[in-house]
Length: 379
Image (tube, rainbow, N blue to C red; front, top):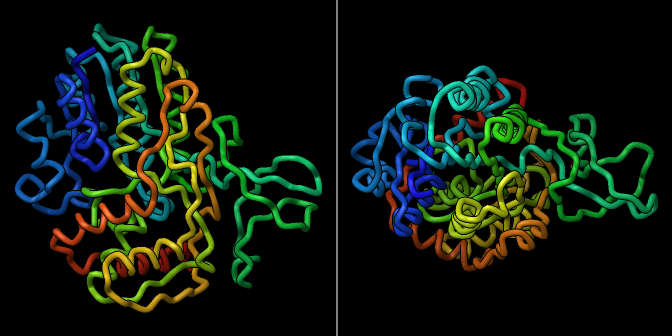
């Protein structure tokens, strides 16, 4: 299977996957709308992600909400890697129609074409997300059982209590790795749309003779990620603030944690899924398998940049944010032999080195916070 369509292939993950596949002899088509939120207002002349691939791929500027663009992009392809999506947990909570149209309806259009036309597609890879889990998996020692806490509410967080709760259980819950069999209960519209994408592809594709694969990516970072999009990626947000000598506002108590996985590891895992039939019909977590708290992220970035800025642990919070989640990698290791190779310190050093070579503008972080405040999502 040498002919691959990557939707969103000019984005951070998609462009890196395209370059790897090209090096392996694959023929790549990219469908991307070059969204200004990701690429800036002059993407075709200034977006480094787009410029890195434009002469190496068959590029189609279009949108996944257009049936005609889908039909053009799918023609002659054997594998589809579906990355195109609106991303951003907070923004999804007030741009609900747009997120649903692009993520859900866009995927439905693809499946409708595959189910009702003659084509050569044999495999579809969907970029799912850790956001579909909502809160991660925990162990309640006093109950001797694993539990999945419900979404946190203002009633607790307004009083500085940010930890997750389990009904009728007063002891502290122990965070454990979230495996693929864990409860699915997304806490944002973005998470709901990613769950919907995954379920549609994993349900429809087998009925029409196409092998589906879903990768539930954790927090992907590395050289090339957008420094201007304030709705995704605390590494970019914090870096922009530091480079502009502005203080960092750490939400909650700074102990909330995420699984940060380096871009090279994400691309490696995805490539293994494309080339191995053992992946067909399977759902995999992709992460580093380690929880890193947000305060550690802020301090590490300040150290790496060598720029001292104040860090304010503010107690602010965003409704829809989770407290903790990190990936259990047992399944992808056993099935595909995937082991992450870039640890957090090494990955951050490589990310910082790249940022230092970029022109970092003031960014739109304050505007995004103002938007969330206006919608009642930022406290």
